[in-house]
Length: 277
Image 1 (cartoon, rainbow, N blue to C red):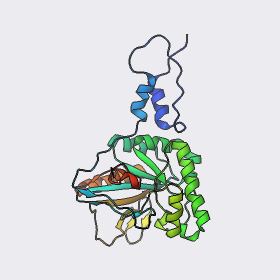
Image 2 (cartoon, one colour):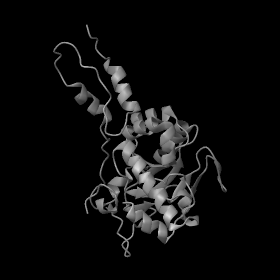
Image 3 (cartoon, rainbow, N blue to C red):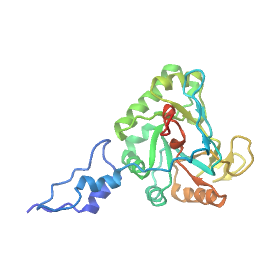
Image 4 (cartoon, rainbow, N blue to C red):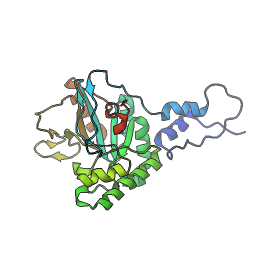
């Protein structure tokens, strides 16, 4: 008699990841069990997280650039006490961080350097399903201003293809490594399907030492004093010990009366987000 596949094991397989657009292979169950289908049960685990949209009147959406190229966005114009957590690269993998993001229901945005898909593609599939959209951070993390337009295009377009193939969604937001870009970067990004370039107002130097702030220090990059400001876009990185570092950041945010929000819900669809307009 053919045995049943345990639901827990199946859910774990689904959360930890399979190829983009694919479902875990599930053996047909014996008998005529009633209730939701296995695919319906998995949908509750694999479905994208839904994050709150901004309240009307509390924000102004970023505007398209006058030159027709993807605009560079460093903060969101809002009166709401929200900040936006973004995490770059992907060269270390902390399983506890996935559990933390899922448990705390914290919206983050991952800017993935696509070469790391080869080593831990399933990790970022789990991150995607915990609530982190995957956006473009090039193939190999170069300083874009040092490259020819042709090489810049290859870095961005090849990353687009790799992320789309693995995670089933084509990125529309780009973050240049080191925050370094030029007009050619914006031009080729548009050719690759990028709608906006997102940089940052502040950085948490998690797992490393920042200039003038020490190890695990926090620094603003806009000269606007210390602490958080409404609409801050905060940069972090996938580094060893990320779960603990992220809990530290959440503590700081909440102590100052702020909350994390999903930056894609504050960007209009024309700029790669989810907001109308």
